[in-house]
Length: 108
Image (cartoon, rainbow, N blue to C red; front, side, top):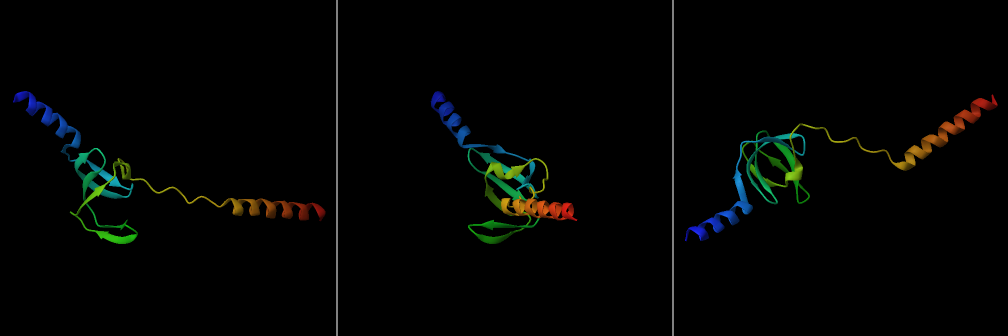
């Protein structure tokens, strides 16, 4: 009986770890509190109002509302999103214009 209980508790450990008081940033911008951690998804509680997208639709998340999120969406620090990369075409066009201007200056 005791051995079966130990095996049962060991299996539950892999499914749901513990309740937590960690404060992290959802997508690096919005402060959330981690409620529970499991293997694939975590349950977090919003500590501030913010807008999010769920299944392609914009959703307003209120303070105190709980959401299920992937751990990869949570960060320890508030971070800004990376700058939008320039298109290769724009960079090539810029080089061409610069080259044309240099040639025009040489001919003068």
